[in-house]
Each structure stands twice: as structure tokens, then as C-alpha cells.
Image (cartoon, rainbow, N blue to C red; front, side, top):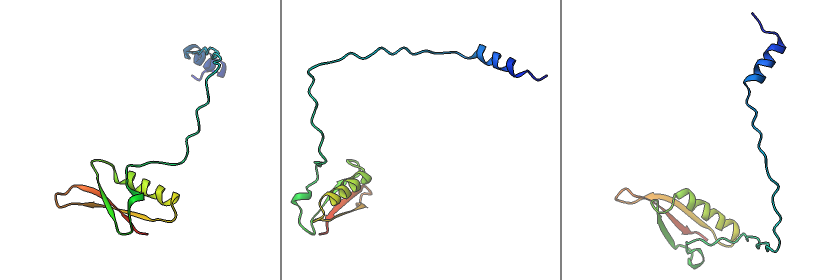
Length: 105
């Protein structure tokens, strides 16, 4: 037999738990200086500035993922339009993966 709408609402209200969260107002702190903004300059452990056209370096996959290196190379290329770096994921004779980065321009 179908319950009437009011009865269904009453049954739902009886079984529903109401949880109230009481949040206290935060206190005011005085005299705390605002930290400086972080600038967009990034420092990586890769020798981009020291490289000449044709130079390269390799980073083992066990040290840093190739996607991470690719992202860093792309970021460097965007920030420094006068140079261009490319990277490729390779494997050595032992079957270990690594990423090699070349300066192309």
C-alpha cells in the first residue's frame, strides 16, 4: 500500500541525523608581516644556462620521471625564447630508462 506524501516525509525526518557544526570566530592577530610574493623564476638542478648548442645531459628515470623533465624543459623554453631545448626518453644497453636533454638553439 502506498504511503501518503506526509507519512513518507515524516519517516524520512525520523531517520535522518542532523549534525550541527559550531565554528568559533577566529581571533585577530596583530603585528604579523605579510610575506613577499613568490616570483615566477624557477631554479632547477639542470645546467641550462651553461650549455652551448649541441650539448646534452642525461637524467635517469629512477631519479626524475621523464614527464617532469619534459615539463621543466618546456617551462624553460617559454621563459627563455632565445634558447631552445628538446628532450627524448631513451633506454641504455642495460634496459634502464633515462631522459636526455639537448640544447638545439
